[in-house]
Length: 573
Image 1 (cartoon, rainbow, N blue to C red):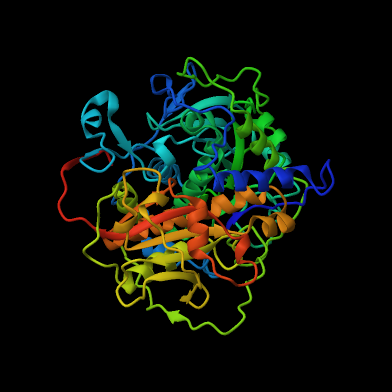
Image 2 (cartoon, rainbow, N blue to C red):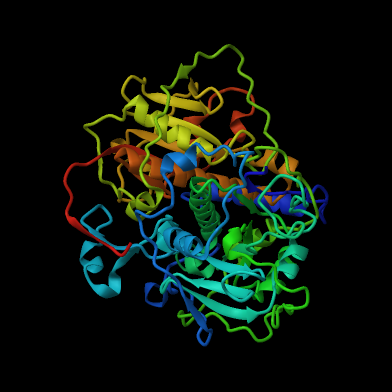
């Protein structure tokens, strides 16, 4: 059973010495680290809010399939089921998706769940009170609530809907049909050989005919303009974390239903875009999830009964509607997208048991002397319904109470859940800056998931208000700052440029697990993009070997919720 987010990276043999793409990725990582001192874009990037893209992509003229509405307290399983999932029982095959369950998963992860309004530190309550400026909550967070990813279903033959390529229209909770016929052969061709999909008789996602997943494929694509209009080149950093957060949401639902989960991040991206009919200048495939369908809703079609996709090359498929009058080219963003693109040329593609993550483990830092550890108390995973938890998920937006410390039990839960999203062979690591944690001395710590323990990091650097660029949070109010970090040079050397996407997929997924754990525990949580990455790097690293290579991808503020609230939570689900 292969389980988790997997980026089958391959070393870039390059066009310029050791690899031009390697250098491009490393340069981008360093540029992001210094972006608060040196802008990423050559020209000052100013968002045109009057011409912002729509958060919901539609394809005018495409036939639509209405989807059943999710029920938050439905049959999605519990958060504890998802976090403690260890694989399907050997005595029973994992249950596959049903059409109703698939629709529910789409809405809970990517659809609209509520209209939300509250007085908080964002300072936009007046605008949000009007319908045109309303904030519509989803189960998965997104930087700036821009949601730059799209979902396509390559539906296999024998399902409750005719085979074809369908797009999930998140604003209306419908499936838009973009092509007819069986698109899965073209998808499989783009995945091979990097996917390493198990053949008949091997472990893995339940398969019907050989290595063909019975439910087809769910493809997550990136439409960068949806977030680049606001962030410029920095949009790629944000968007790849957003996609990771979505993969985290989907994996939770799969595991809560006792189904294994895999997301393939390295494939022949050009071939995949062709199969989906995408213009790679505007949108490109980023992750592929094979789907297993429930036997009761799946029948084997006649051998000659399903024609190939009629317009899989995009020649006749409806085009997405772009509401922006002017879509600006962001050269730096295009460069880093090309450098990290999947190749499908192989790399790590095996089906090793219990592999949750995309990478070979990076060498551990070697301390010059034994470092005492602080073992955390055992984490009791809340048994709240996962659908209910996703529907109520929200950022604290500064509403963190500095008077009440975080307990070690609460911190233990958050770290345990975040680590579950990545597993033992992770690209990323987790660091903790304790500011007000009960029973824990203020300072920086490295979290070891295997031992479920914290190791002090020898640093004297502390975060201050000047290290956060925005005004919607106070650094001092957070009980703990959680940093998701990686070592780019080591990851690229082992896995190639595609490891950038793998690392961000892991960090985004881990952040979503942590966010939902905080929600379940009654804690306030905010995923933070405005921190100074260099300041965080200095605060979470010590003098051990390899620590200077550590780079922060994403931070989270964790703390007690401020009592009282003024707002509206008009839930649709």
